[in-house]
Length: 159
Image (cartoon, rainbow, N blue to C red):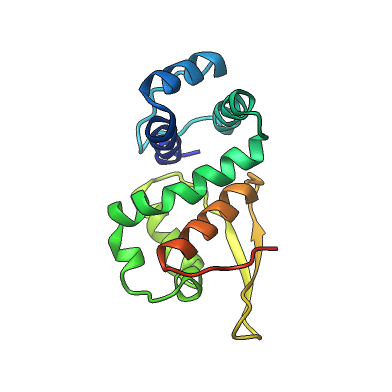
């Protein structure tokens, strides 16, 4: 997994719980904690960090990963406004994942393995997205989708 994801995890934990808590989480998780955005790190590190945060907060790992995804959209929008600015709503933004955003991510972060989405748009009020990834981090994808909806000021139902 690319380091940019770990940078987002760190930002969320530091912002919500403080610098000392991040240091404690890193120690308890048994990971290095030094992640560069272009580096590649074991997926297990993300799980270890999220599981540690979950244990400390009395929730589950998937909920933590989903929360991190949700909270990561605003920092991503600030860092990459060109992905967000052309859109007025979450649907049009999400429709660019396969054709624009993920190809650009792979250029920016060589070696990045991005998920693919099969999308059905038969109903103008529904966007059916089928997530495909060897990582199986649909919880992160769900959080990012929810965060994107908030970014565009929309309320969505995710099932």
